[in-house]
Image (cartoon, rainbow, N blue to C red):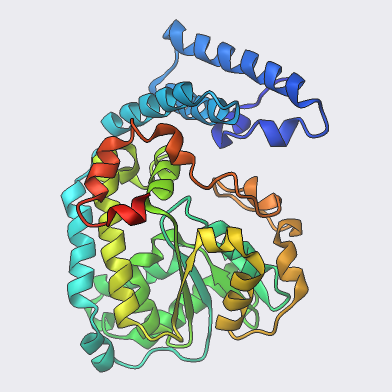
Length: 356
């Protein structure tokens, strides 16, 4: 049975390819596959991008096989290669978040021009690998909702407005053009939708100002679990902060400061924070809270989100085809010693009790 390049890219083998077979036979086969993939690396003939992709795929494969030291070795090697290949300015990324916190205050919202109030889209946002796809699927499983995936449309409209100074203060225009952009290509104009563009956590204040009837759900996850999940994922050009432990910690802390700012600034009817761990431990209660927050009546089908035939193009594409599971909780503990730089940096602003 051959593994395709797409399988390697998505880092999904076990659940996808071997349903119904003896688990021991599957593990034995996957160990052979991992050894062959490692042999490819030792040959030294792979291109840089192929080597990076293979390292992250092996990290996922070895973790599935519970070869935790080998998994970390491959993830670290992949991160090192990708980090060296990226040109970025970590200080500029943090400064952008700090500038947003300083600019988008309650007083700014109180004096901002009126937005476009004739639409009530739902935005699910947060750092990658923190449960945003799960929350999106829960919402999209309701008969009144459709998912448009990760559109990037709001950020694009905002940047377009800023480039044209004559429209930079036209918040209603930004909101209307965003709605037009999404409904022109992805859903009919009369259908309510959920947008899961992750980077929208930067724009929560602007989203509320431009679309005052919109609902924003900001997804959180245990800091160490979140950072390990981000670290071991290959985003192919996106989220460049994810490939170095201390840079990742610095960005996570900036995201945490921004989240706390939105919590203080936005009204509770506009912003709901959801913890991934809470969904895993009590799916029904959190799902009801989400559906109630977006103003819809409860439907039992929401609990069967994993049966949705809608496509998913994220790193969680396989996971959201399964019922909720707890195996993703606490995975960082297998690597606690080797994640010490990450942990130490997070301790600068997060109490030890929240990192335990």
